[in-house]
Amino acid sequence: MRRTGHNLITLAFFCLIVAGRGQEGNYKFDNYGNQSMLLNGNVTGSATDLGLAFYNPARLVTVDKPSFVIAGKAYEWSKFTFEDIFETEIDLNTSNFSGVPSIVAGTFNLKFLPKHRFAYSILSRYRSNIPLNYSSGIQENPEFDPLQNEVSRVTNINFQNNLREDWYGITWAYPVNDKLGVGASLFGSIYTSKGGSNIDITAEREDSSTAGYSSVLNYNQKTYGLFLKMGLAWQLSNIDLGVNLSLPFITVDKKASLLYQENLTGLGPGEDFLAYAELDDLENKRRTATSISVGAGIPVGKSTIHLDSSWHSKVKPYQRIELPALDTIVQNLDPEPFEEEFRSVINFGAGADIYISSSVKLIMSFSSDFSATVSSINLFDVVNPSEGKVNLLSDFWHYGLGTDLSLKWGHIVLGATYSRTRSPFEEGVEIPDDIIDDGALDFVTGITFERWRFIVGLEIPLLQNKLTGQPEE
Image 1 (cartoon, rainbow, N blue to C red):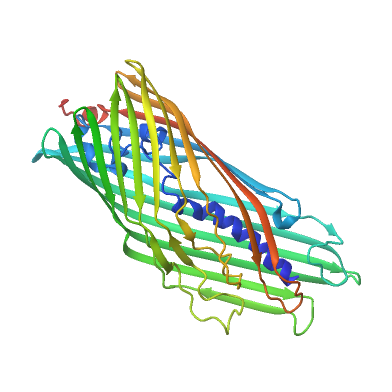
Image 2: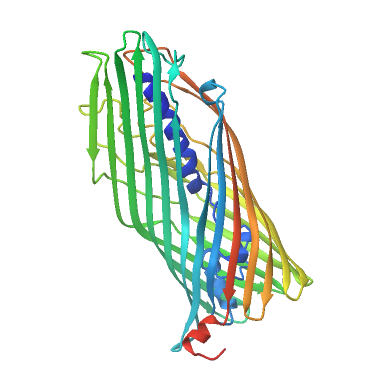
């Protein structure tokens, strides 16, 4: 039964890895700004909305009038499917539909710095809140790691992954001349990552006696810090060009905690056990890659072709959360389970806004999103003492299609983006057990992830003037 509990923890936290950690190893998983979202972020040299605070702050010199972006909103539907779990021919899936705020931003000028441009922005950098619950009901004569003389079993699992990061930024830009602009964005970051699982198994034997296994595993990491982006924007003939440099995360404050509880009852002296650990103020770190993006906006008649490429540096292996020696408390916990490492990747993409009429443009795009993840923080490795690490390496392709409606009072952007990946996963997992020792467990599954984001964006260039009573510039 203890082995069964470990296997279910394996499944639970493997799902958490997929649901929550994949975003941070896929650098183009989220995009910001109305047109920029539909262009899948291929706007380093050609951003026209206030997503430029993220993609290239120097592009702020091209904003002629104060503006305020409202209702920058993406409604997301996503679905995970896990096929043939533990070779049982059972598929497990979970889907979610929610509203995902993208960006709130505005521009402003300072009278004593007439040539300088400024903007403020709030970005939802990461969002993931995916629960998965399972209840077996009564299982008669279970074949999966049965307890001796076991005739029935009830298994209940519930777990949830929550990943959230918000950026609060200020952007500055300055036109060096008519063809060249420089700029920078400084973002304050509030980041929270949580993982949790609750597993309960009750079994009945032939003599009507019962045995029970339960496990609780939770971790929480929260960091406060800064991100700095610096950009150049210039024109070559009629072509817009841009470069953006993003520096690694600068830590201001951080904290982490872990709760572990596991117990087995009903097997008798020498086999029943209780393990518990509650750890606060754990040593922890957060490291991110340095990146450089280059892009171009090439006019073709009244339409524009957007080209973009980005490079992210590697992040060497390090312990995201460090656990003290726990041999005397919890023998099943690996003291270094939270290793994180990212490889260097190059992504590319293209988009187009196609002129239909003076008030309508058609927007379409595609972008690569290759996974940089070599290993990432996850609680699967806490309960898996084997030498191998378990990570999902997902390469995404993102597609976008929509329209930009230009009206007298502003812009309305409507459209959708679609993302999909499928990965096979095979891993032999050695879980030592004093009660049942039947070798490695073969976790074999195909994992599919699909995501639709439906975008409704509204930009009103003159709203700030009306609110402040300032004349148009």
